[in-house]
Amino acid sequence: MSGRGRKFFALILLLILAGVVLGMFFLSEYHPGKSVEEYTFKAEQIGQLSAGDPVKFNGVKVGKVIRIDSAKDGKHQIQAQIQAGVRIPVGSLVRIQRVGLMGERMINVVLSSNPKYVSIGDTLEATSDEAQPEMVHSASMSEKLEDIRTSVVAIQKDLRQISRTEPESLVDHNVNHDAPRRAIGVK
Picture (cartoon, one colour):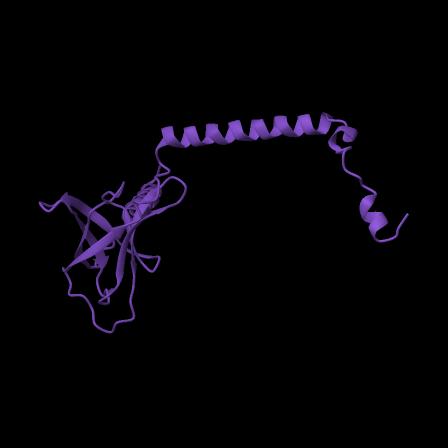
């Protein structure tokens, strides 16, 4: 390979390496030059929430959970990084929610219309939808599916039995079916 061919090959390798490095930054959500601010949320129940889960404002991702600690008062302290410049209005609702069929967790902040904002670094109370049954427990989920399957099989059996029954046996012979016709004068 000539000297010119080697230089071209080295240039191609450097471009591929740069693309891989930039791709890793993109996938890791690291954005050089982009600053973040930290907020703390407190909640009694957090379910399966963990570091790395998204923080959304009205459904739009603006940050992520970076750490969860248990406080002395029995509540969980959740540290989250939010994009700098994105502010939380006073009176906004902070909810820990389940999303998707597998029960992925996120923090969703439903923003209020208050023109005053919470100070950066403040601690906000969060509520959890943990009162709803978890779908991630595979044992209870498989039990529910088995109950549904059993019910469907029983319904199928009843329908087969009804369809085999002679139509004549479904008629109540003790009822005078001509009585309504005679009452209105139809023969």
